[in-house]
Image 1: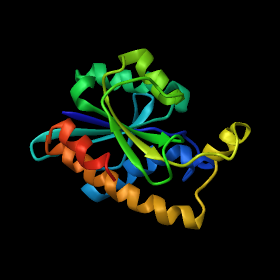
Image 2: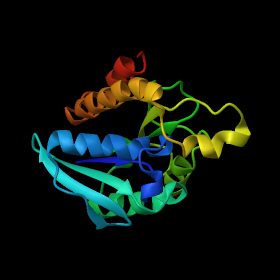
Image 3: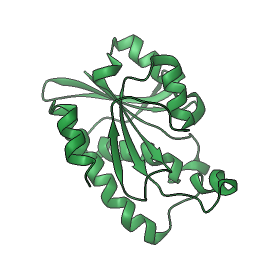
Length: 188
């Protein structure tokens, strides 16, 4: 069983913002793989499907970013998921250049409030797919930057990243070893 989580903020005002890259990638993956509509459960939107004999759960926490762990821990406990091997979290990262990916297995939150929340509930051991959204010009602009939308030019860089993450998630579902996944995708 795999739990794939996309991080973001609920509400129309946050749709398609840099901070909601996780939600957007999960939506694209769900559509591509033919998942049913998301249902409201566990303080999130959830759907599940069996792919090649393995149950795959997609989750978009609806708790706002800084409380994402509240939703995720409920799903982990209910389905008895081992976060170290079966939890994959997709989220935005300002420290990565626009359109770049980085897969990590553990570590600190790196200043990301959604990851801080997950670590506080489940510890540091889970698979992270960090999606580069670029950096604000100054720290004072960080909030407006992450809550802003991609420009047309930025979207041309971000859209291929979405496709790459979809391929990465497919590799995870094929049970390819995480170190091989890291070698493959951290180079790009």
